Length: 67
Image (tube, rainbow, N blue to C red; front, side, top):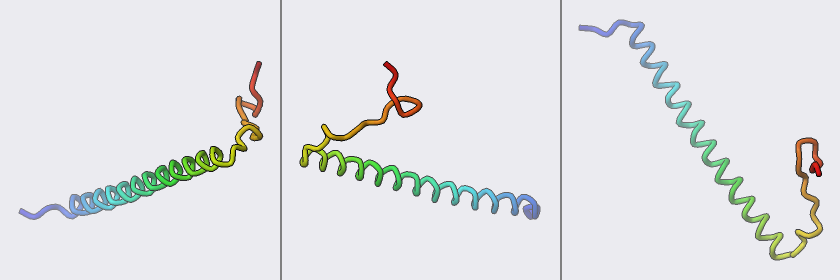
């Protein structure tokens, strides 16, 4: 028995979308990893140079911390 053409087409589309999802997931994973590495490097540099006390940290919804 032959598989109907529509089913073959849907299976091909499903495989394409699954591949796109895998690629997007890999890109997100790599981006998060790079972000974590960069954040860690910045924190280490701040610790080595001891200039963290001179940084202004932005907190709060509008850029200001509510008292």
